[in-house]
Image 1 (cartoon, chains in turn brown, yellow):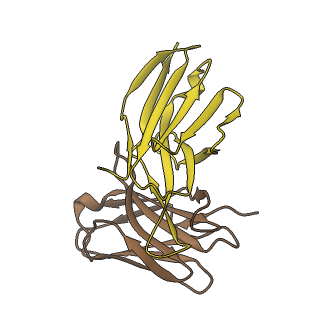
Image 2 (cartoon, rainbow over the protein chains, first blue to last red):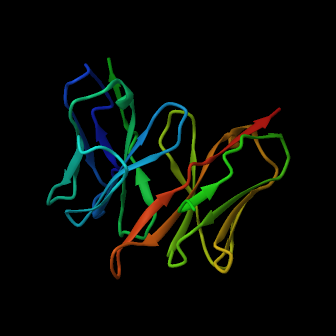
Image 3 (tube, each protein chain N blue to C red):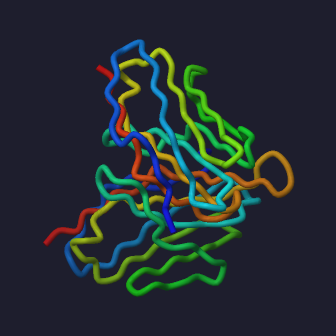
Length: 112
Length: 114
């Protein structure tokens, strides 16, 4: 069975551009989480989708947005990129909102 | 009080040592509890779920104390390969019945020294 897949694995953008990151959850999983992890730091919660709806978002500006599609895959969009947005962006999925989550390998975003 | 709190460490221990990590959580309605392990520049991976009765997996033992809202992870006979960051994760009720959100602690870094 395929795990959580994220694309692209690496992304280089210039300041001010927009980035789109994609996540395909494990088949059957309906909950998707997005996290940002800057180098050497802990996971920062970005967004949580469950059954197609945004359930919660972390303390990030509105230029961080996303959505979950009917097939439960998800997209994270970051507008007006800033240098500080350079980080590893991790997506995780869980079968139910209270069960363990499994992570993808992440998208490493570099803003230059 | 943060939702999930862990001692950030780092914990530097010699091979063969026993090391314990602690985690506290603030939401008394929390449903599920987990420990994850994250290697440098990699994604977190599930280490073990934590059950009310406590559970063991080889050298790893997890305990849950709901009354004190406290979770622990004990690693016996530490190996060099145990060096990683250990994340405490709690699933807490969120906005309505039947909806829970996973919340990650910031992690505790462990370095096992030869």
